[in-house]
Length: 321
Image (cartoon, rainbow, N blue to C red; front, side):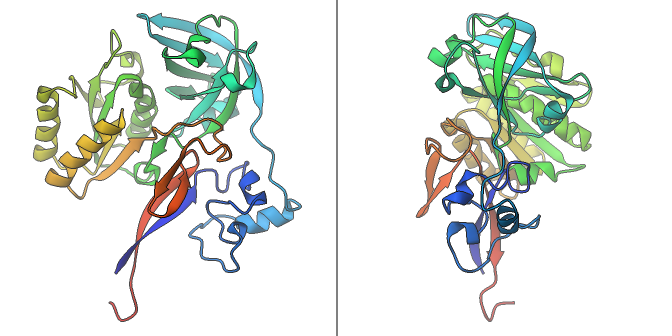
């Protein structure tokens, strides 16, 4: 039995598929649209190659920019803003999925000021989305002066790696560990898991902020919350003891790559069968798999991390049972 990595596009089967990558034989999912003569994809939806041909061998319409009204702006400390934005109910519904994000910028700034932001909360009844922004560099500093309108592009969905395991989880035991600005995407994940009747333990670390800013978004009657400095020795001990003493079907890590690596080591030692889901920390610039800023090497393959989900399958060799 050999292990095979299956690469699937997060946009496959959506209104934005096939995309521009199909026109250059760079499709993530479809083997024909990679320039190969045979079909060996694992996609179970509408055939992407057929859709491409039906569309005149062209990409479908791309995501467009639009101006959204700022409903509320909250500044916390000197390095955090929370924006509440009015959008269509359909747009908000698309962003209720775990790992959803959008690109935003000041409407008076050029396109290269667009910066990706995780969706913290989406309300498809009101037609409203909330994002939390850590003020770090030029792009995020340019958002400080925004009061009335903001430019938005989306929806995008690949902010979390390992999404399949998370979205199929029901009636299970889950450990969520989130630090700093990664508390924002954790809210969307928490609400999704609660809807599917999962039992959740949440470890929150405010990181470089003055407070943990998500209390108003979580139902503490449904979630066991623990506040801890997870990069301290005490915090690491708390995580290890929780993993050792509980059977978790899935663990989510929201934070830096060193945090992901440390938690993965704990799971390998104490609970190797637990599914592991992490925030996508690659440098996302265009979100469409075109610019290459998010590219990473997996073996001898270059992967576009802004659109690609990697799933593992096992293939029986000839003679194996």
